[in-house]
Image (cartoon, rainbow, N blue to C red; front, side, top):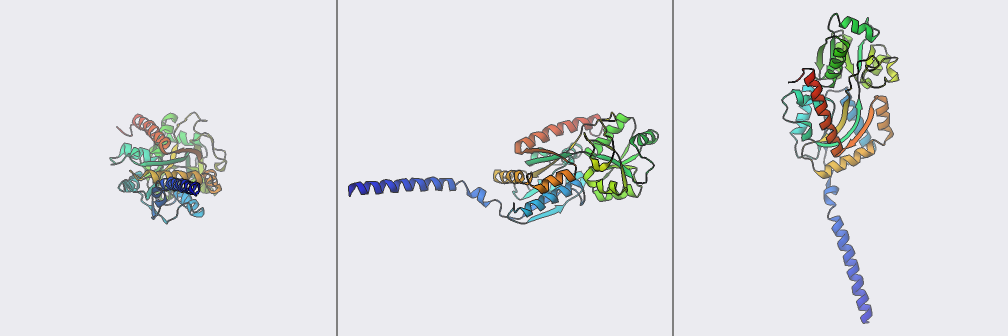
Length: 327
């Protein structure tokens, strides 16, 4: 009887200890379990139709398809100021776990040349996912069929070249290229891809730069002609187009595409989105997006992404100062 009582007591203590351990573990869960439980506000810092817009909407389609977020996701285009308006809105949501945005080259260059209250390091870094490069294109009926013809005329009269944003990658690439090739340019900035395309097709500008995913359809339809590409290898869809490097005018600049949360977002939210994007990049839909938009997959999470942004900003700042774009 006494031995039974002792065994019963020991068993009770063991069960109590086990319960305490489980309770202790569960005590660390609520913060993670509680997030997310609200609508997510996704800011797109540029107008509809551009690369940033396409990337954000592709991500959300994948998230919804695989049920990776339990609540609603509201996307809003907040174009203006080369991304300053959109990222300024996200900055104003400091401390929020429910405000997110996609990045581009302007995320780095805009605060270098504008008096923005924010800088890239202010935001909560989630993931770098890819980088992309630019094609220089002209009207499909343009007299220029080769980059050599374009350069020859450009040396006589500076061409007008359009890009998305002011002092960003769209500006840096043609500026460095033109200087290395020995001609001047007049850069014209647009906030939205659609407006820039209209300007080119109406002959309001001589040429424009764009990532291949945005213009490959118009190249295939012959509404536009690609003359040169800034990346290491020209996508087959653009046709037999040389790279700037092959012509001796390597610019060495690519556009980072990533995801950030509002400043001061919680570690729980950051961890949730890192894990979510680790799943997203493994989906066939994301791989198709990378391939069809001719991007180079370049994946870095959290602090590694933050380090990448810092290093890239230092490099961009050096180039822009050398070009006289910023003081």
